[in-house]
Length: 127
Length: 192
Image (tube, rainbow over all chains, first blue to last red; front, side, top):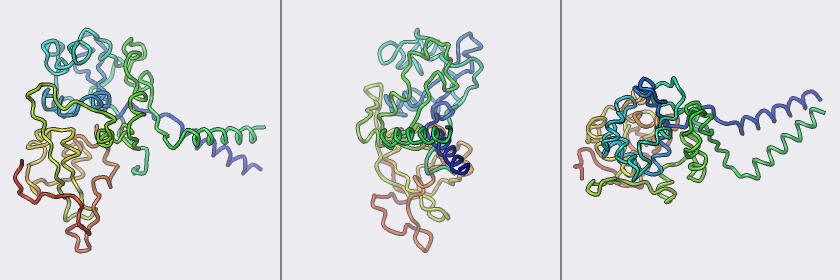
């Protein structure tokens, strides 16, 4: 009887694990906080998934000039206002304008810059 | 009775999973992802990953989306350029790599890469444009170099070995076991 009870508990735990949420930021999320907090704004969370639904990589990494190494780009609000980097689209025409501060500067205080999204896989490819 | 309760709960959950279909993908709400500040007014206005990604071709790794398949099936139509004059270059050949290694041969599809990227994103800084001229090294990739610039950060991760190492090796060890059903480029072929 206790073995049966143990099996049932195991089944419940296994099902709960299957349904549990992964405990990480979305894959490819980048935190930009070289200057944000030092200058009084929340860190920026850049979601690759959101942007690649709308644009191919080459738009930002070739046309707009973003280097493909997290941390290799220094982006200032002045440049954005001048239409460079994020400002190429975030100008109120292609995407929301740079006066919608909170939509990009939405990160938790104290976040470190860099790729933050998990690298883990969920399926048969797990090591 | 705890045992009976556990049984009922397990059956109910299993039924729910079976009824909902095989898609077990889950995405954290932005306010709980550890990055977005729940106190920020922006966090509540942004699109949730689940709303955008759950309708796209499913995968088990990364964003849990097969991005190339989503593109090919027209589930997403991402823009390829902002300025009218920007050339959009596509190259459709395959290159076989790792011809002398121990693991299966790598079929590198230019098409899947140039659908997203421009030639200049990889050439000439990361890779020289001549088949056989690049010393590829998994240890470097695992440290974010070579293929690892994207694979492991934004493209499917390096745990998905067989997606790249996809061509069975002949017994002689230096070529594919069967003809690869897509055109390949010979070393030194000129770029278009």
